[in-house]
Each structure stands twice: as structure tokens, then as C-alpha cells.
Image (cartoon, rainbow, N blue to C red; front, side, top):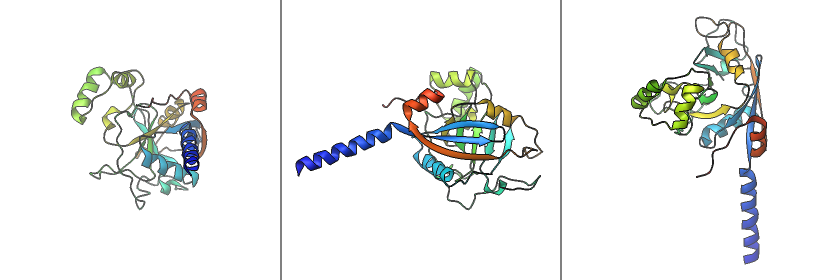
Length: 233
């Protein structure tokens, strides 16, 4: 009996280890091009919800309905599917259950960050479906110091360097949940952010999307896209 229990424990640990060696890659396909996304383990509720929606084909045929250059591109409003030209979008999905705020100080609003949109609820709960991808801009050191004081943050040297050399939207840190990042073709964000739009920041020409997900070994994800997983503490 003890041998059986030991064997089962070994098998369980092996399966868990194998699962930890793999992760999901989301392929985002748009009318402007394709990019790949990795979701963070530090935000398990958002990760599970996003994967569920992708697998259900929820995002297919939706559009990026709000784009602001040097800020972000936003999508995921179910009302954007087959929306008429000029229709005001951004309120869809409000009947879906919101996701609790999952703040991780390691995950900042750098260029390419994937984050959940939300309304002004005091708990900072996220929309269950709407998201945005950061384009942002580069920030000076003194701007980051001011942002730390205003938002009760402390950036690491690497995070400060990222905002200064790569860019992002640091003023959103600790306000919205960052739950993933684009790991290749960041130019796609620029191509979408710079399109012509109307007074409500909706692109004049619809930018449709679709998403698929695939599970790969983490080593392969790093090899294919250069994404480096954080070391376990």
C-alpha cells in the first residue's frame, strides 16, 4: 500500500512538473497583421478568463474600437461585432461578471503590455472581456519618480530602464490589471494606433480580430519569441 501511495505521489508530481514546463501562447490575428501573446501566472483569474474566451471564439470578428496614438489600442467589446459605421462602442460586456483586481508589482504597463479595461468601480475590478494593449511613449527619470509618489509605487532599476528606453504608460500602474504581453511584432500596435479615426477614437476603417491558443513548452516559447520566464523565488 505504501509503495502504491508513493508511486501515485511520484506520478502526480511528475504531471505537475510537466504542466509547469508548458504554457499557452495566444495568436492575435488582425486585418493589420499578426502577433503572439503570453499570459502571466501572477494573474491567474484574468489568465483563465481570457483563455476561456479565446477558446470559445468570443473575440473572433470583434474589432479594436478605440485607439489612441502613444497610449493604447482597445478591443473586446461584443457590441463591435458587425457594428455599423460611426456607432459608438465601448459599453459592451457590462452584463458579464467582473474580475477581481490582480495587481502584481512585477508586471508594469510597458510597451506591448496586455491589460484589462474597467469602469470607475472603486475595487478596480476588470471588465470580463474588454482589454487594451499598450503603445505608450518613453518617460524621463524625473517623470517616473513623480509617478511613484503619486501612485505609491517603487520601480526597480530594470523597470525604470524599460520605461525610459522602450516606453509604456506608467501612470496606469496599480490602477488596472496587467495580465500578459505581446511577445513579437510590436510594430502591429503602432500600425493600429496610427490609423485614421473619428472623434470617438474609433478607427474609420474597421480593424477586426480573431484569436487562437496553443500550448507549448516554455523553452520553445522562449526560443520562438524571446520571452523569458521569471525565475522562481
